Amino acid sequence: MKAVVQDSYGSADVLEVRDIEPPAVGAGEVRLRVRAASAGVGDRHVMTGLPYLIRVFGYGLRRPKARVRGMDVAGSVEEAGADVTRFRPGDEVFGTCDGSFAEYACARQDRITHQPANLTAEQAAAVPSSGVAALQGLRDRGRIQSGQSVLVIGAGGAVGTFAVQLAKAFGARVTGVCSTAKTDLVRSLGADEVIDYTQEDFADGVRRYDLILDTGGNRPLSLLRRALTPRGTLVIVGAEGGGRWLQGSDRQLRAMLLSPFLRQRLRGLMSVQREKDLRFLAELIEEGRLTPVIDRTYPLSAAADAMRHLDAGHGRGKVVITVM
Image: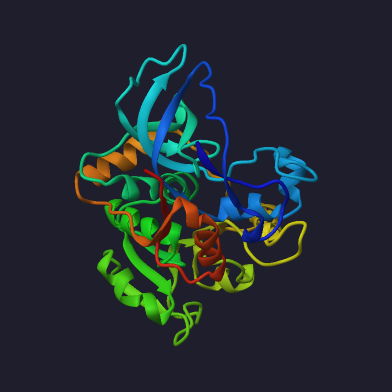
């Protein structure tokens, strides 16, 4: 099969399309004929080996332990391993796995679910990592309530486009923060108000929010707290910038250390892929209340170009790789 492989850490230049053996299905797994995958920040971290902390956490000290890139996947079940009870060959599914930038990949049955009938494979592949991060950030860490005022920073990005729609689905009044080029998109997703950060300061001390979901990178905690109500909640999703060891994740650590001494709640998020959360998202999609946003699509042979586009940092929604 063809797969996107890397033998060393580095830029997108280390990615190569090669012919390798298809993966063998294990107990509790299904082997998928991949239809589409999506590229995300997690793929970039594993590709570059940065921050260095991820190497310590088991991704490989000197080179990637898993050679095939890709996590988000949509495809059809080709073979079900022992102990698989919920899927059978021919089922169309989506979720996460190791090595989705390939013609075939194996996925644990507890990290996939059936694909909504109203989505293409490309749309389905755009959902898992970013959709689950937005859901867990708002619902689990943010404890969102109907009627709250919610600020989504990075509202036009991969996680932000899901967060705006999910916050509306939970009954919140939503303000999205994004660049000028994305304001129309964020309004179309249902945001009640849109702030163009190149023109306005959302932390001007006048407007305050019950819940802030920050997917935007590296703003200081002191600035974010100015935009919170006295007992509001800040959830930091991901981290960019900073040094090579932590690359901004120190902001999450500082937030968690500071939070016990404040009336405001400051939280970080390390999302976990769960089948029940994928099903929750699938139900909203089937009801027409949640729609994945795709920025660009690339063929498998141009996966390196997809990662370069992701690195540019100006995407609207998700970058998708079509496989079959």
